[in-house]
Length: 618
Ligand code: AGP
Image (cartoon, rainbow, N blue to C red; front, side, top):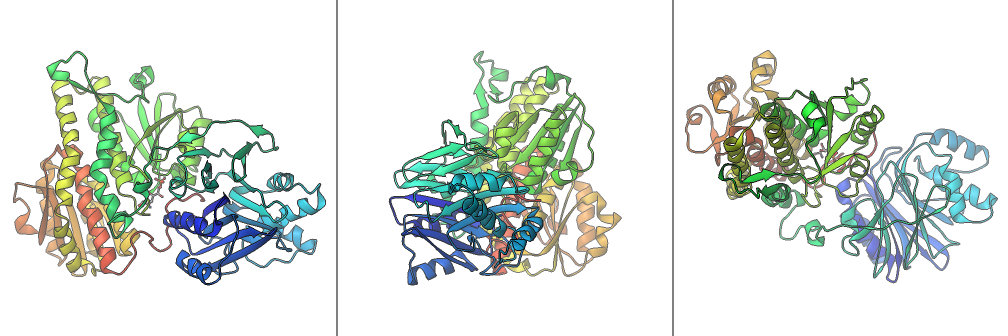
């Protein structure tokens, strides 16, 4: 959703703000703008469309100044337009703000301001904030910080907010509630941004603002304050992400780069959790060891695991259901976070709660986590984002270590989440006595081989590219599979619809005859995952059922066999691993297929229409 940034320092602000906004592009947006302070005046430039348009306008007609704020807007209140773009100012143009979030009581506030003669220029909820700050500023003691603090007391909803005031050219005030915001200082000056990649070029040491906290940025330092203005002393958090990991390098798109980063991402999720056993017992020489998690009596007594998440993270959670039930023989319930939070779920003291989120900032996922905690549950978070709200509020955090994921369509975050889930499930299986030495070692060896096998799949990317170039214009594309292949089908259908805008659906292959088969015809492509050997015959029947009705067919299955060759148009062969680990490999050709379909259709896979990387509002 919207991206915000701010800079105050020793260099021209406009180019720095534009660079930061470009790093936040992945969040999704329809307009962009900046406000620069110069000679104790505020200059705003904002417009509908891509950041490049704003940049070109600034080249033609530069805004000079060493402090400013910037924004990419993802429209919620009011259509995408120049006027509705941020920054918004108060009536005399001396205060400018950028905002990410939703002010739920803005109509009431707007009516109150209008009754006092304030004229609104935009349809946004955000504009009220600028006018209210002005109200408190003009009617108070002239302290901008105090005016912001008073304003916040009137706002219901979520916000990450940055404020500049022409009378205070030496500072930027930033605050957050339920929307992400980080602040950091480097040699060039002080910065704020919605997310880490925007700051990596300048600093790796950042403050993750907590709800209600205010950061006052000066060119050489940052002051943290509480919601009444009291000073807070806290150390910064060091982010060891490489600035290079947030640039495309030689790849045409972040999505393709991130698909290709999966062998490393899975390796990075796996390696820190594998420890050599000191006893050097040949049968048990490697152990899974999560420093973050101690398998104690809570795990021994657990009667159920509850997993909650959204989107791709939810699909990883469904794989988790199959994995925990398979390895640890414990019942698992998986819930979409937006459903879980409103459906009055039942809590039990013997439940283990796992919440999954790449960004750690998804509004519904955070709400689900808070609900669990209010009901006495302890939450294990699986996330990719250090310092995210989820990681700070959960009781335990398992990091996926995938590095920044910029493309809206999640790829490496998914496979690294699934890798972490397998490790947890396997270790729980050992701890609860369901998996013994030799088998445990066999599974660890299989997981250790996955990164290299993923590379082999990526080496065959042209096979998928060619297939996509023949099939991309099918009007309906379906994915089906059984057992571990079903959640992979779900994730593949989500990926395809996100970036190719093709109507795609997933179904458990056994459900085919219960409805979906009515949709099958010559305009249909069905991609079948067939990696569960005991179900090969059943999958073969399902594939025949779709091809005999005219559908084109691709089967993704293990190499070395020709079981499906005669009944499908095309087969993609995966290097062999344990059937239960197939999702880690099988999803890769499907990701590539989505990517190449998007390219064939002329879409930008990194910035799919209507989507935002991190859904920070409901
Ligand atoms: C994935 O391709 C999607 N962009 C989306 O479904 C995403 O997985 C979902 O919004 C959850 O995000 P999170 O993992 O950051 O919580």
